[in-house]
Amino acid sequence: MDPTGKIAGRGAYLHNQRSCWERGLKGALSHALKKELTEEERERLSAFAETLNQEAPDEEATVEN
Image 1 (cartoon, rainbow, N blue to C red):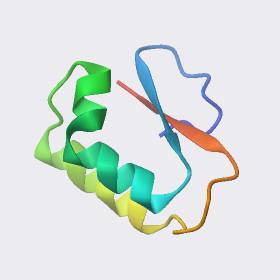
Image 2 (cartoon, rainbow, N blue to C red):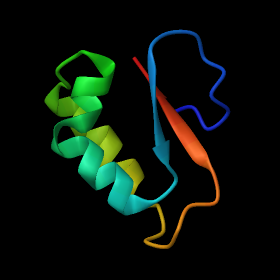
Image 3 (cartoon, one colour):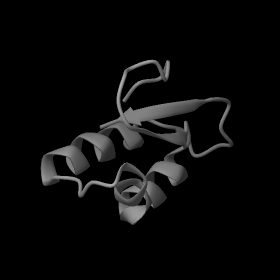
């Protein structure tokens, strides 16, 4: 995760909202990154998503590949 969006490499923008991350982990994120996520990557991203609010997003975070 790169909240600043400045890490080099392919990235995908997700709102800082749990529902966006849950949707992304169902397949949209793999498609955007053009890479199949490993189980370890899914677990890390899911754990991060659990820390997010369910409310409307104020900002976006970037996931770097």
